Length: 549
Image (cartoon, rainbow, N blue to C red; front, side, top):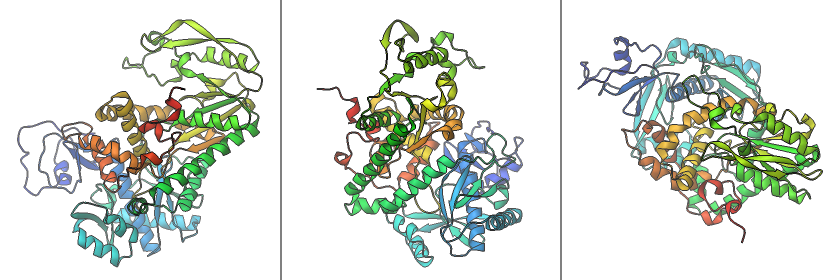
């Protein structure tokens, strides 16, 4: 990632010089550049250079650079699909490992079709066609979308409060994307295509080695969970942001919330049934940040009570090692998410003794001192009484090595967002989780949004290391996303994000969230949200956090 030196005044360059041209004559070079960040604002390499100071190149090593690449490669795919199957619908559904899952609803995907699409994409890349940016007035955009039959774009346009609209063009195909593109198709050379399920995986470059496509990872459990979410959207009759906004405006949103919650409750009951049928005694729950693990574990516990069981919870917090005994990283820091921060041997011993009916003396960790307290508390379970354990390493067998596999039941939980802005602009699961985290941290921990944004990269690294590699080991997956949540979360998050100014190092992240929230209407219907809803964990009013009367 090239960081330009700060200089006084402007760089001596022609008044209409573009970043792409400027980079070719800088000592730092710009062969890997995908865009430029200037005071936190992302600019295209085709943009005119107006300020040199505080500018830096964006490459595939940057989150924003990867988004530019993905967006541009996606457009190349859509262009190839339009050439081979003109007028056919294409839907960019969701992320899938280091790729995108794409659906062609009216085309039966075969290996031959995928090979033809890949060859057409390679032809577009080899031609190095310009990717042009067009600015239209709202009226011009409406006329264009009407003429081309893009009803989803036309509907969502009515909810934008801006007077202009940006389209991109490759050859004769014009399309809308919210965010910058690379200047030409030749800059997205690395990719792969694979038929998978009923759709296609568009594989991105490997993050660790962008010179080659990322290795395909078969994730059948995850694909099934996404497919179930797609069925839910059919039941809810809500595919995109325009559908959601229409329900708010037409006062149908309250019923929509009720059906959302009923579908999620049914999913929890089904997981409880699976656990009972498995005959397991240890129920392990894991998932990335802001998935709603705590509320889910409470609701699953209640569902098990309906089966006549009386589950108890073992807290991993009690098994933390003293902070001063934890090995440090090479830079001297402590990674508190590593499994080595836990007394795994003691936990395994206690779990083994508990399932055999013994009483154990559980330690207590004092977070103020960073050490284990001197006192312990006795703990035991009755024969057949389930033990619930929730934590980041719940799916890692090292944590429960003393327990036979048939006695363990693992649940992976994550909010797998399926609601997109339109067919070609998706709302990322990571962005939806980040919104949850921003709101919860601010409401209940007094944490400013910038502090949450500052720690997000570290949180994501921990998830990539300690959670995602184990997700397919789960016996059940629970999608904690609620299709109705963004209009609720916007009320809390939007003002906080707007308060982050251009001089903040996290302005780019904030603007990214603001951009897609601009398309979402706010809904003030919190009295309709059940007190046991996953969403209550983030906005407050959750019944599981109230003291008994």
